[in-house]
Amino acid sequence: MRAIVIGNAGSLELREVPTPEPGPGQARVRVRACGVNRADLLQRRGLYPAPPDAPSDVPGLEIAGEVDAVGSGTTDVRVGDRVYGVVSGGAYAEAVVVHARTLAPIPSVSGAPLGFVEAAAVPEAFLTAYDAMVAQAGLAAGEVVLVHAAGSGVGTAAAQIARAIGARAIGTARSKEKLERAAALGLEAGIVVEASADGSGVTFADRARELSEGRGPDVVLDLVGGAYVPESLAALADRGRLVLVGLMAGARANVDLGLVLRRRLRIFGTVLRSRPLEEKILAARLLARNLGPLVAGGQLAPVVERVLPLDAAAEAHDLMASNASFGKIVLKVD
Image 1 (cartoon, rainbow, N blue to C red):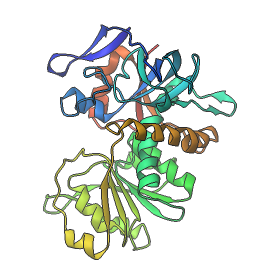
Image 2: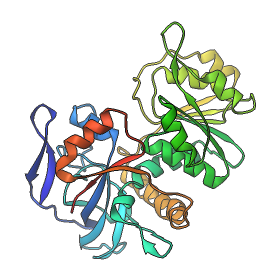
Image 3: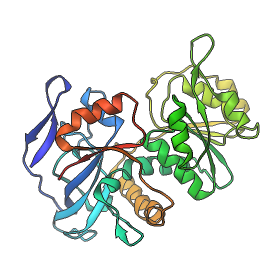
Image 4: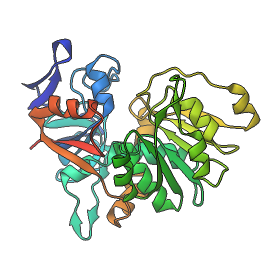
């Protein structure tokens, strides 16, 4: 089969590699499309190695395709099923083998099956946002969530999920254009992030509190990290929750722990890729039972900015690294 392989000095090369065979309880998916994520760029740079159950040199964390083979004892999926899901790695290929229970059926929208390209833009973005905001931070109807990087794949998913559950979403971005586009997805208000007066960080806390009736957002979904963290804590309402999902601005921050104590704030981090199998199966159930029906009902829709062929993976990475895209970038494999 064909696959994109990380070569010397982080190059991306289209090569012929052995087609994997499914073992007991596993399924092989003929990949029709795969989403591009910032984690793929980090893996290419040697900063985010694949877990033991994934190819070390083939990136890619989300797939959409058809089951074309199953291992012994596999009963959760059958050959021919249209499926999508988050994988530990190896998505930039014509086929990938995963535990069958980590897959979810691709929903239909208005009676027509969701296309593979659109389906490939769902799992990582929507699962990350739903799991972090709702399952872990407990975002509920009537609450306010502040979404950083509102124009990203996870950001565009978060705005839609908040609207679907009756919460209010406000967001930050580096450009007014991205915030305007996100407004069509359910973002109620946006803040263009600017550098602080002394150049040591960023400012948005005061404006975030104004946009939430002066009390501050109940939840912050932080895909940026770094200097955004202390500003997010300053913005939060009493007993607010900050969920750290990404570290685009760095892995270090100067945090006022007294503020955390006085206002009874909670800070926690989350990842999908390195979770044990049991938790990945639970994530697939969220995708099938909580998110799939909302996609089928039209309340949630993937936002696809660009579709490129598999052999243009390097171009897709350059586009993502530029931070110019809105929503998801997808590689079409067939």
